[in-house]
Image (tube, rainbow, N blue to C red; front, side):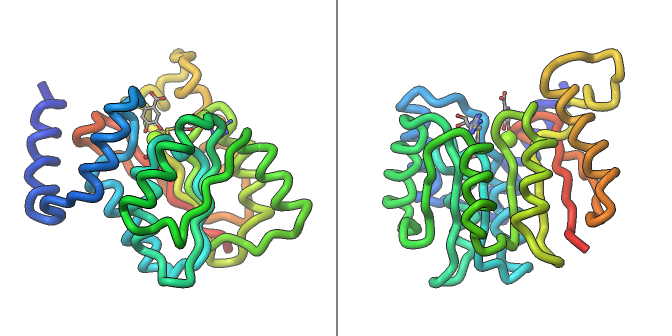
Length: 221
Ligand code: SAH
Ligand code: DHB
Ligand code: MG
C-alpha cells in the first residue's frame, strides 16, 4: 500500500534529518497517554513549521488548535528568546496537557495557550488591537477555516504568512461529490484564499506518516 511506503520514507527522513528528540517524544507520549487522538503534524511537518518561523524571522506566531502542543513546541523552538506564540484551544484538558508539554520542552517562556472558542479569541484580539502576527497556523475545526482566514487578514501585516493544515484530506478536496465536512471545508477555504486579493497563495500536497494531506501556504501582500 502506498501509505506504508510513505510512512517508511517519512521514518527514514525523520531519522536522518531530525533524529531522536526526547522533548518531542515526551510530548507525543504524554498526549497519547492522556487519550488525545494522534492527529498532530508529523515530525517532518513540524520541522517545516519551525523552519518557516525561522526563515520569516517571525516574532509573533498565532496557532489555532493546540491539542497536546506538538506543533506548538516545534514552532516555539523557531522563535527568538523575545518571541511569542499564542495558541488557541477550546478544550481545557488539551490546553492543560499542552501547557505541561511546553514546560517540559523548555518553551513555556514563549508560549501562551488561550482557552476558548478560537472565533471568540480572534474577535477579542481585533477588538483590543492586538499586535499583528507574522505567522498564523489554523489547524482546528476545519469548517471554520474560511472564518479564521477573515480574522487572520485583520491580524497580520504585509509579509505575514498563513499556513493552513489538512487542505487536501486524502485528495477528497478535489472530489466535488465528496461532502465530508473536512473536504467541503477545504474547498471553501481554498475558494476564500483565491478570492482574497491581499494574498498570494499555493497549496502543497504531502504524503507520509499522516497519509495524504497538505498545506495552503499564503503570503499577505
Ligand atoms: N496543531 C496541533 C493539532 C491540533 S488538533 C498539532 O499539530 O500538534 C485540533 C485541535 O483544535 C483540538 O485540540 C481541538 O480541541 C481544537 N479545536 C477544535 N475546535 C476548536 C475551536 N473552535 N476553537 C479552538 N480550538 C478548537
Ligand atoms: C484531523 C485533524 C487534523 O488537524 C489533522 O492534522 C489530521 C486529522 C482530524 O480531525 O481527524
Ligand atoms: Mg492538522
